[in-house]
Length: 315
Image 1 (cartoon, rainbow, N blue to C red):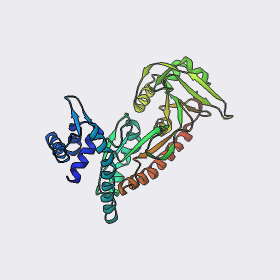
Image 2 (cartoon, helix red, strand yellow):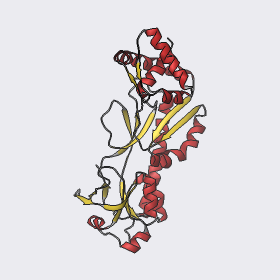
Image 3 (cartoon, rainbow, N blue to C red):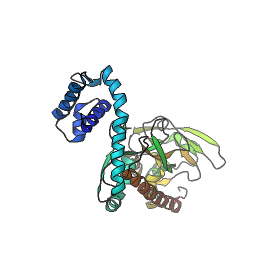
Image 4 (cartoon, one colour):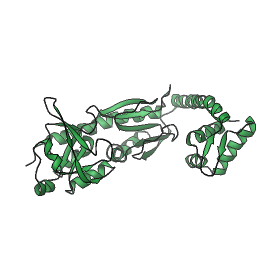
């Protein structure tokens, strides 16, 4: 058996799907099947139970996977460490982020990153689903909000803040809320997650908290789409500060409560750089982490300046 066969076995075990591994490796599905069949013949036992809909490990396959997975991981890390000693960041860097964050805070800066690291290919997966980093072979993810407990390593990229925004057109037609409680009588554009869709939490400068129920006729699972609807005058929206800087500066949106901190969950949320828990972090991942910290800091500073320049009470 060779290392590539063991790598295929580990990937199939993680994904539970031959075709998905074949797509990731740009192989014919029959090649993956033959590799697994050859490994089973060599070992003398079946690794997977196969049906028309899924592939699952046998009891013997599970025991073998639990021993082989860390060994394959160690060999991969050793090879990567050797390459990193003799070369610039190279190969393929697979990164995932939410659609809104990726389009706003990553895509505009990819040309700079590519120019800095010409030997590195970036595979950027923009999705609002929370991917399994190991099963999807993700090197690094950007995740927002509160992190669930896991075996992953996380570094804080920046703290997140939110503001309640509306367009001048909406305010002219429906009136301007002057205190947080007023939003209960307005159409709110809501994100379909727990908290975001039922109530927004305000904290004044004395630290006093108030939970305000929200209602509205529109639920959208993408922050950029929510911003577009708010600009179109469809209602109030709770939006992150890294997204709304330009709209506030240009007057397309107005921050209704600049003297309040606002959230839908907790006030100590952040954007996080998350990667698999490994004893060795590849040079390409370190390069992207460093780049994002520098780039994100510049982006957030720019957003803060735009927000400060435009934060006036709505008429």
